[in-house]
Length: 510
Ligand SMILES: CC(=O)N[C@H]1[C@@H](OP(=O)(O)OP(=O)(O)OC[C@H]2O[C@@H](n3ccc(=O)[nH]c3=O)[C@H](O)[C@@H]2O)O[C@H](CO)[C@@H](O)[C@@H]1O[C@H](C)C(=O)N[C@@H](C)C(=O)N[C@H](CCC(=O)O)C(=O)O
Ligand SMILES: Nc1ncnc2c1ncn2[C@@H]1O[C@H](COP(=O)(O)OP(=O)(O)OP(=O)(O)O)[C@@H](O)[C@H]1O
Image (cartoon, rainbow, N blue to C red; front, top):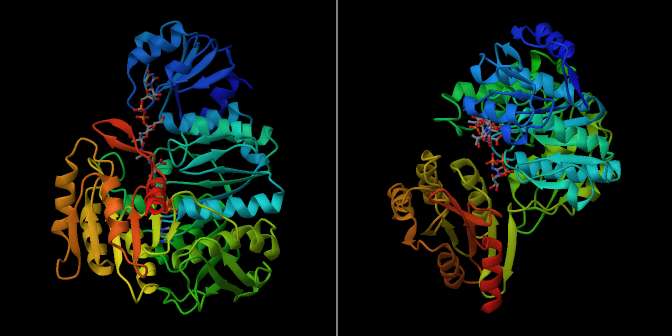
């Protein structure tokens, strides 16, 4: 893989990003990076974000011969310097070119939404693995699967990787024989131009509620919505959950680049839709259970019927909202050519780490471990579980993260007041804050006439207490950490056994 200066300048000029160039213009680069620690001979280095000039000095010392940035630096003397109007966009364009446009060799299915991205991406990946006989890659918040060997599976740092990493990983996936890619696209990915210039074969919009607004994320809800909608603007075929808030805005965004015959709308049967739009696919379920779900999917338009996806689907992950997530994955699967039978097979065995994990105990009811960590997700989770447990109590163990998402504390108080009987407030990634103070803040939003609250800052002890106090008709919910095996404390990822392990051990010791 390589990139020469003629390609660099042509691409930047074509996209009106080019400002100026100095130095040797006959260079060819055999490596690209935005991190000086990765630089090597003949590297093209990108100066972006919270960049410091000494990183350029370090990159040059390691052999970098060119750099791209929004201004020139004295530290880059002797290197070819290309200045651009937008470094993130330039990096995405040049990254795609350096890695030989791997997206052209992949059928790409991309999910966005405030909640359900990871879950739906896992559902879709499972469908695609079945459909393609294991030729499907996955870029999720949890992991990046670039091939079928254990060494081709990596933990993720970001929901959507930085552009150079994204195209690097796509190239690796293609070279590993992958033909399909399922990916999550965060609003930050658009805000930071990580996916600039990328077009998806199928883009799915799941839902939007206020979240990720604040310092280092989005200044306003309007900005958050705009960034999320960019996924649809950049998709050849769009799938929209017609139950989402702001449906009109979302639908209009899809229509800016996609004909209505390539926009699919789905919803639960009987759901109230905000706009007089015709649905394409409905799903329904008369029998929810705590352990899995069997729901019906039916096309209700001509273009929906052309997908041949009608049928009853058994889903190994419970929760009414997961039926909605699965419905989106089924439509995307059908658009990629997967048959209903393939999708039915896949969904019966899918597992999403840290989402709706179950640990059962005969005397103490079922324990659910779930990543729910804001109002919308906790409300969705608890209201589903509440409906399943008329006879018993809903007992919740949770905390809230320190130094970010402060509004979640109020949301937790609200969701607990609406759906829980007991809450044990504890620690969840307190960062530089005191977990007890965070817990007290959550408590200040709880209606104490409805919820009995106690405090236990050692999360393991809190989990033991919750399981021990529950009876066989109760449900215990361990919320917020999912499969995390650390607690972020004072800037350090402190090892943590995981909620699932602790719950299993407690049950074994009973
Ligand atoms: C605000 C934001 O988006 N920041 C991201 C951004 O940071 P940045 O460009 O400022 O980079 P930086 O890490 O501060 O460092 C500056 C530059 O110096 C370079 N450097 C640094 C040290 C050195 O020795 N040499 C060197 O060259 C770095 O490689 C970098 O290019 O680029 C970095 C990767 O290059 C990301 O890790 C970082 O994500 C931050 C940490 C983050 O976690 N952001 C969250 C908000 C986020 O993006 N979340 C979404 C999910 C949210 C959702 O669910 O919707 C996500 O997609 O993950
Ligand atoms: N469609 C949905 N609507 C509401 N809540 C949901 C939905 N799907 C999942 N959830 C809840 O949200 C939690 C997080 O789900 P998931 O990880 O799939 O979402 P995400 O969009 O990837 O989230 P994040 O951006 O926080 O990583 C789940 O554990 C569940 O409690």
